[in-house]
Length: 231
Image (cartoon, rainbow, N blue to C red; front, side):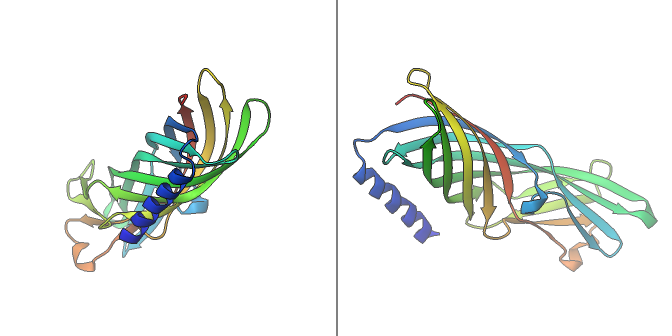
């Protein structure tokens, strides 16, 4: 982790020294999170004996701030700070015993992204963008929640110690004006290298002895809405 943070600092320092006279803009963004089975971010089923569990993502979102530093006519470097909240429902069923219940919880994290962006001018005011990079993410806390119908059903989610890193990819387009800032819409992929946390569900403490767990991989796709203020 120390090596990655040092790499981020060196990259920012390098581009800052090479482009001290270039433009830096500040922006805000809001990103609804879209479940997608193609990136392992949709429903997940897992069983333990006759117990069946289903983890399904609910409506989630991310918002934060962006700093974009222009390097040249077609290249920029972006960083910032984002708050991410991913909401889940974990259901349990056991047909022979007529057991059926759900519990809901939220996984909250903070993200520091670093992305290298290139863009081409499509018309007088429209620009097409593509960006790639990395992010370091810190999960806020471990999570406990119980069933809505029966308190005998509960889950404990344990975060990954030290946070995690993720690959970032983004594509979009923006409308630039001289007086009213820049308006952006696009889509992004957030893909961690490995699972980011583990869920340990239990019913009447029967699952504890089996050390049964469900991995949360943390992949997601977003629709991005951004606004950049003038310099």
